[in-house]
Every structure is written in C-alpha cells, then in structure tokens.
Length: 237
Ligand code: ADP
Ligand code: MG
Image (cartoon, rainbow, N blue to C red):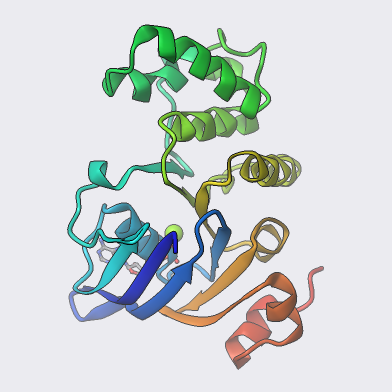
C-alpha cells in the first residue's frame, strides 16, 4: 500500500475534525478526498504530510509507520491552492530550487529541470517569471517543482481551486496525463465532485470528519452508500 490511514482522529479542542478515519490508498493510484467545506479533508491531508499530528491512530507510508516522522523524512511533494512560486525566480529556477537545497549536483539539476518542463508541457516558458504566466501555467510549475525530487507521494490540496472553470478543466486533463506518466501515489483534496470523478481512480467521500464511502466514480454515483453521498453527489449538471 502507498498510504494506510489507521483509525486516525484529530481534535481541535473538543471538536473532532477527523473522526476515526481508516483508509488504504494503493501505490501508484490517484485518490480524491471529496467532501464539503469543513469535512476534514485538509486536516487529513496535513496529517499524511506530517504538518499535523493525529491525536490517535497511525499513518503508514510505503509500509513504514510515519505517524511521528518529520515532513522531510516523508519524501512528499505538495501543491496547495496558494502555494506560491518564488516571484523573483524564473520558472527554471523555481523548479530547480528543491534540488538545490538538497544539494543535487549542478550537472544533474539542469537535465532534470528540462525533463520536468517537458512533463508539464512548459517547454519554452523556462525563462519567464511567475508574473508572466497564466494561473494554470503557474500551477503546472508548482506541480513540476513538487515532482522535482521524485517524491514517493504527491499531495494536492484544492490545487486548481482559485482558477476559472475552463482552466480547471484543462488542468484536470494535465494532471491525469501527468499521473499516467509518473505514477506517483497521489491524493487530491477537492470539494468539486466533477473534478474528483474525472481525475481519480478512487474517491473517498468525507462528511463531518468521517468517511462516508470509498469507491470508483461509477460506484459512488450508481450506488451511494449513505443518504449524505446521495445528496452530495447527485446528478452532474
Ligand atoms: P476541509 O478541508 O474539508 O474544508 P478542514 O480539514 O480544513 O476541512 O477543517 C475541518 C474542520 O476543522 C473545520 O471545521 C475547521 O474549522 C476545523 N479546523 C481545521 N484546522 C483547525 C485548527 N488549526 N484549529 C481549529 N479548528 C480547525
Ligand atoms: Mg480544505
């Protein structure tokens, strides 16, 4: 398994943000955590990332208990909605940054950056600054940067949330394509049912800190397991 979440609970005061969640995310799959605002998606993702510690339960990454490991030890790539690029650095320099801080050899960094520009279809944009890119292109740079060090796990928290509908649609297709190319175990947090259905192999529907259902988009659509799933998913319109 890529990721195993085992009876994980996270409280803020007496409020249960994540309530005894268990999940298995197969290695190489793309899973969406789908649910309304406040359902605990980001808190769960942050615990997988190591940015937040569970009050109880365990998180296993690639067969190892990572519950108390640091963010760095987990070898994870992140993209958040407002995970800004460095404005004073070019696209190439932004993508190279995580490689430089990990002291990769210069002669390895150059070809790796070009490979990543190819991967996110931004050949020809390497010398631009973030301000000279569209919102969608910036998020593709953020994806390339997150993948630079070949993380074992990629975590995306509403990465396309701030963009308009047309760009989001394009980015979904890029994400799907990217995932077919690199096959890194990916967790995508979204409140957008269409996004989850279009992109993910498996969908985890969350509500009030709990998992309501896990299944493919067809399973969740055709056989909603709970009244909540039925009302939340509904027909795509
Ligand atoms: P989602 O990502 O699904 O919108 P979150 O995981 O961000 O949900 O939040 C779940 C609930 O936990 C929300 O009610 C939120 O207000 C609360 N919460 C999240 N982080 C904190 C925190 N650091 N302190 C207090 N409450 C928090
Ligand atoms: Mg959130």
